[in-house]
Length: 123
Length: 113
Image (cartoon, rainbow over all chains, first blue to last red; front, side, top):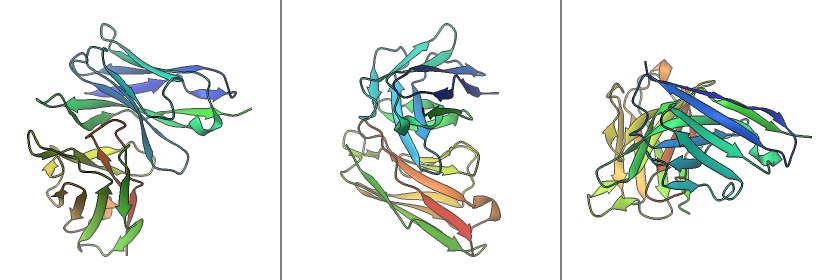
């Protein structure tokens, strides 16, 4: 079955780095755009970043641009999120999600989600 | 950035009754070239990731019960649950895909009265 499994979360001090991974299975990874979405404890969803199917196009939430970097390895079917200069406000559950893109090259939904990995930024 | 708002913050509806959630975007999410609204709805139950319910404002995702429907265009959208079931207790989010960052609404919590 289609599955996304995040890993790499944990407790990290402010200013340090962490790399999240999202291992995928059960579908052909390469044609799909992939997203990261986060959810702070007790809060709503916040979209973080998207990467195009071939990795050439990337977009970010304003608050993480310049600190986070999204990437993918289509041969290994893995999505990554490199998070640098972490701040306490980055504390959240991070979900990877499979995206959809239509014939107008526009994204339009997140149809498969992982269970999330928890990142806690604290001294 | 496009700001998404939702109303109400929460609502309690009796089983079998209608639940209506509103979502408003700070600018139009209608793409004129294909006349589609780039607005999606999700359901999130406690301890679970979100689940896609509706995309293009009114297209129901495969497998989603037909008691869920989406409507609206431009800047104003509605998610309707026609006959609330116990398993529909959740938080519902809208999300725009018109332009990056693809912002979510703050969520609406639906409970049983």
